[in-house]
Image (cartoon, rainbow, N blue to C red; front, top):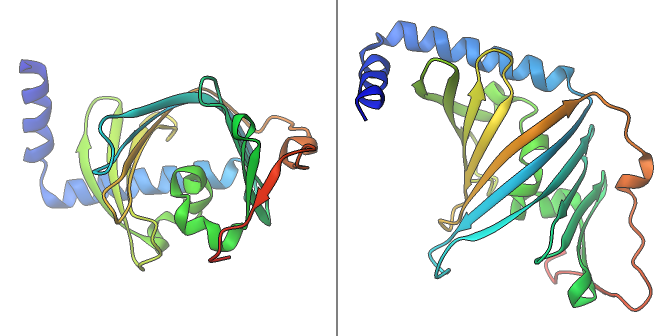
Length: 213
């Protein structure tokens, strides 16, 4: 507790120009890392809290991401699920339910921020109003509020100072649902099989298209 209070006091005591300079440095490094990342492979853990839920929903799995807008999230049992984008179409496959949701990625983007936040970080300073929430020895915590109402919600990122890796992302949507994502075992710019981002509904699986799309 004492260490926490000391860190908090130091963060609060930083003069405004110093915090502005540090925020600019953090955003510059974050942008450079994003622009230099072609592919990303990682493990993830996820927690979801919502005013409509009795408790937290927890899950974990693996993530594969490739520019532009190709991604695959494989959720481990017991709640098996694959969320996949081929760049044009978003698929949400639930094998135990024998159904898959299919929607155009452009329209689905607003409703699936936890899935697509990596793609949405393309122009941090242009598209978001940033705030440096805290700065400790090895990480920044940055709040990003969309400059336009795109239904994206608010992003809070824990960013490692030495290389601008995103260790944790917390996304709160306009309805108050908060999703916390923690990434580990990250590997960048590795070769990925194109088949990872292709999806063909298996026989006997119902394809569901949301009415809005």
